[in-house]
View 1: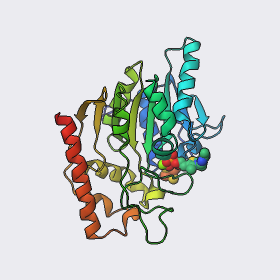
View 2: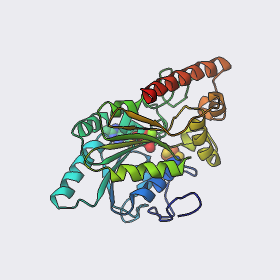
View 3: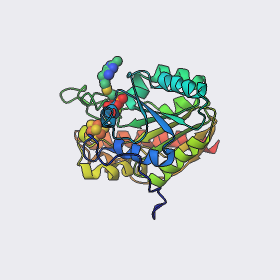
View 4: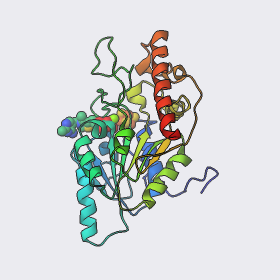
Length: 292
Ligand SMILES: Cc1ncc(C[n+]2csc(CCOP(=O)(O)OP(=O)(O)O)c2C)c(N)n1
Ligand code: SF4
Ligand SMILES: [Mg+2]
């Protein structure tokens, strides 16, 4: 442990092929500090499929099962069943998918597995677009963002899907949000999820992407922190589908987060006000769930 109460053990090798400042790489580094070496990770097609690398040059010190894009939920279910058949109750299965692989193409396999309350941890590292194939929009892309599928002067005009609410509606034991800019909170949530046995645990990790967001690599963590401080990405937990706990109260204006990113550079003051109203509305809805 160091001053921040973060375990010293590393389960990632020093080198990987991600871009400098990749939030998804930071996310895995922190997650594995809680998960430890008795973990098998299932990775569908996404940037992390490339970061993990081909055997024997993998960037992780734990076993990796690469899966087809849509199948993280189903593959993790099968891997859990295979381990159970071998009598291995010690190993935790962790699915690790991007937002495209979770919010979009993987939602059917995930919902099926979650409805069966399969015994694994499902992590969505959310960089808010299909980054591995060149920054196409997903249903996790926020309102106001430019992507390569919003051509010309266009930008995304619909809101980000609320995936934690969808998972909570399945009444799973544990669903939570986490951020690479809050490592103690994040590692604590993985530790908690690991200790809950016999059901699906879902963690939605905000993972900034310098390449796709048009931000300097050294701003990656600062921008992830601002997402929480502006209540754009609140940190909270949902136990049993209904019991909400808020972990952080932000108080900064959304504009502070938006104005420093290339993907939002076309936005006007009117757009900033519209986005602020959306953030305030979502925050009020979350407060109602916490208070009830
Ligand atoms: C069925 C199928 N369609 C498309 C692809 C191409 N593909 C590979 S990764 C990817 C994007 C993944 O996006 P996301 O899940 O958000 O992860 P990220 O790359 O952003 O980390 C796509 C479209 C594929 N591998 N399989
Ligand atoms: S494109 Fe984004 S998510 Fe993918 S490796 Fe680069 S920084 Fe990471
Ligand atoms: Mg993505």
